Image 1: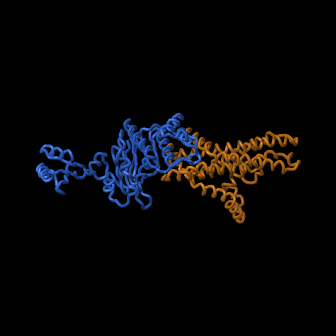
Image 2: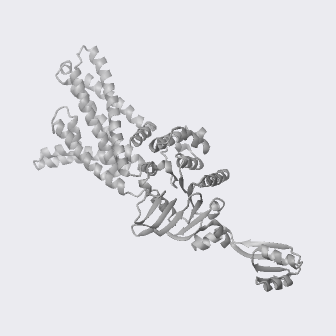
Image 3: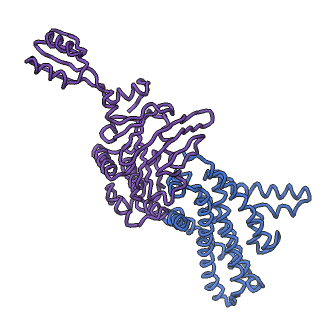
Length: 247
Length: 297
């Protein structure tokens, strides 16, 4: 299992696309941080939890990237026909699914590390130049919460990829779900006076982890609900990948 | 050893393989032949655990492939479809496989050298020619120095030198006691390589035999040209051989050339020609599979 996991990481490291995700994560973190500092008033920069929110806001684009990379790392096998060779080394398919989930968690960690390092560098230099004191506790709390969210996004993406197999289908489906279907569900649930139910949907659950406003489920509830969605998709991934004939 | 027992695979209403049974012995190269669509690739993929059988069983080295420990060290496989990511270099592709299979990294350079891809190892696979891709696939199959090789159409895309190298290489591997199953849809392509043949058609077993037996099937009449043809015909018939005079100086004899030569020599008959007529192996193959009009390449 460890060998398979290390091989998954080597697969990712040896593809340019992976580094593209890292560069985009770095760029978005820089952009969001610069916007968060440059767009805030002098007063706002001194508000409690300003730096906490700054770090968590960057987790939103990083989380989406982590989700998409998680999808790609599984569906690449089917898109490029490498699944046959992979299964020759891992004929017990549940091992492949577990390995992919671990790889999704690892890529999430790496993306959040890059994003947070970028944010921290900008925060230290820019806020230092503005004589705004660094709130180490806020930064650490934000980074920890962002890390959990981005890791779970990567795992969720890998599980979704394992359940769907089609790369285009999974990528488009995930984005359409997040930005079209789930918001529509929110509207419908609101019309039915079931507003709270929307907090349990996948994107809302994941978003609840990195939501600095704490509007939906509490942090622990969001983590638990995200785990539930991951568990559901993992079961689908195990069934789908396990039963599929690799022709 | 590879064993296939009562294997049936259906895709919906389409029967790809039907009640197929055969054995591939260690120390021999076994050709797995059949026209395109006969079920060869499906059978190989079932053997390798990639396709679920509808019924029947397959085993490699005594176990289903999925139950083998560190299968890449025991079974090497080349599939007909290319299975490397186009954006990865050939060397990286093999390093990934080595890492996943628990194979020492040094082996990557060995197999790259073996298939003469060392110089192209850093290039991304999408820039490889068909022949280079095939050689990379062979390198992947040989990576674990396996006891069993399952090769689906390994000569595809190889140039004549490459085919000759492959032939000699497979023979040398078999001489080391390894089990080798090689599929092809062209009998002539594997005739010089294989010891045994498994021929299938429309998913069913047509023939499992030693190559020598199939070659014997190819033997036809012996043509004899002699100025004393009628007398030779009489002598051969007297010896119980089926001989027919087809021209003043020509006989058609259903007997090995050695027998005809011995009779002629014993009676001092001059021979101007003694030729064993043979059907081509391809003709035998087409006859066995029964659809001469459908074959290509």
